[in-house]
Image (cartoon, rainbow, N blue to C red; front, side, top):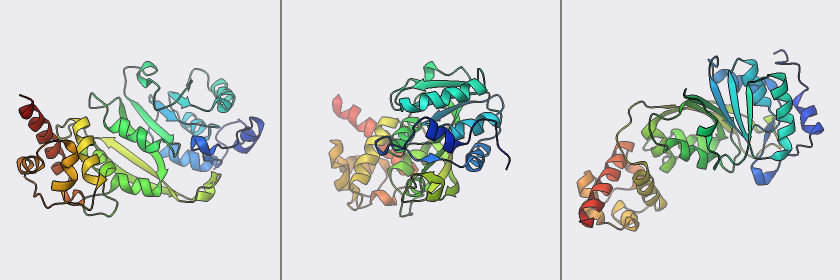
Length: 286
């Protein structure tokens, strides 16, 4: 593949700006612009789209997204060392790259986005990837402010996201993702593609919001899944006791056997448990 733009190679950018990856920030940089272009192509079409990118670092994926036609990118970067490198990209693509310096877990993205839905495309820092995904899956109102999420995770995390009931990886993350999105692993990325190379393979996952997911309170669903999978080998009549309600009454109302375990309950079952949990709390509060 030909050079995507006339900016310097990423290795030169990293050397010039002293961007040694920091483990404390979960940084693993992608040097290969062919690979970043492949990730960007997976997010197409990009014309007339505002993209949110988390942790752009030296900007390899940022450059690919812009070269492939993204109208605008809102790039959230916590590492102050990377800002100068991103500003060089912004100068190359005037008016199309907004750099937001801050922690993605606390930045108010709505303050930087327009009325149209955005698209998240990111090689997420490993240390905040799961927390960010849960934020995006439980956001209100729904449908959300994004039309899709295209994210890179460690392969193990990716498998937890797309798992179905009965799979070894099925757990809390799979329930939250399966409730509100259609999630799919698109392709893997070998450790050698990163600097420094992680000890595991990574995977690119696409999550597309369901327009009308089963009605459910996201906070209640999080509490139910945390309790159920927190002691996943125990029967639900035991693992759900931390919720502070009559566990047997809750399970009976949801139509679930008290001897069942969390790993045996489909997404719909957890949604029903969350609904009945809210109803039971209201009835006991009277």
